[in-house]
Length: 167
Picture 1 (cartoon, rainbow, N blue to C red):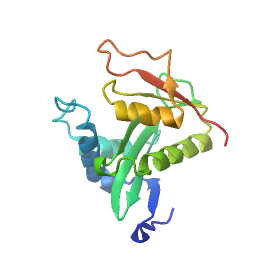
Picture 2 (picture 1 turned 45 degrees about the horizontal axis):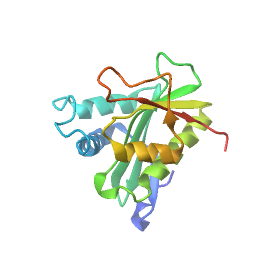
Picture 3 (picture 1 turned 135 degrees about the vertical axis):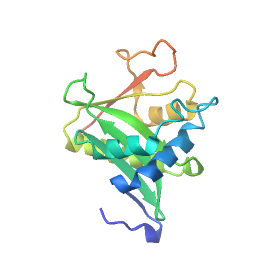
């Protein structure tokens, strides 16, 4: 994909390892909005974790770039315990200052396009119960509660399911 952000267009493309620091910083900013007591593993080396995620041969990290900056990220891969036609959306974040601007919708559409190209029929994710903004976003995109993936014992991460269509 050609980076045309100089003209104000949003470009969605595969992230590269040298962007891991920017991706990690965006994730921390976004997650900090729905974890009032601080994000889990706050002391983790998120840059190293994202560098690994970007380099994984069995995963994919997309980034949305606007005006030369990463403003959205999505990470997904086939879950080790799941069927081959299923993909797990592991991380999905938009820069908080850009919420409700269409970036999330465009990034989600790019994910679904990649899932179709990869032959996926179903996508799954876990969403923090207290993150009502994200839960509404996913519902607008067509995600539904996954009866096979109820909330964990802490009640904070119920599963959602998305049917990848052939559109």
